[in-house]
Length: 146
Image (tube, rainbow, N blue to C red):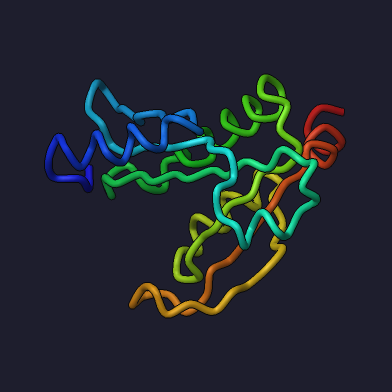
């Protein structure tokens, strides 16, 4: 995991878990990543949608490179999407991926997400744009449950 001490971990997950479902990704009992299904909390993204919609965001990371390219991300996204629309009755799922992370972009696209915006950023050295992708409940039920 990226956090170094118990206080940092408690701060991150304690705060986030108030508006999110937080999941630890394990392989054979060893943590290899994390994912969240969270109510949208970014004002600029919330402004992209009608304020009556339940917009959620997915954040996900598999930290252990030995587990990349094994379909774990695809399975996680599928489970989170099913949970968000089937159990939580969200209207829209929105994700933000750095433009350098082509594998993640493709994984979300395989799960029905489409690009809705590209936003220039100077926040990270290895990315020049944030790629915003979204999937609506209507699109999900039309494409994946028919």
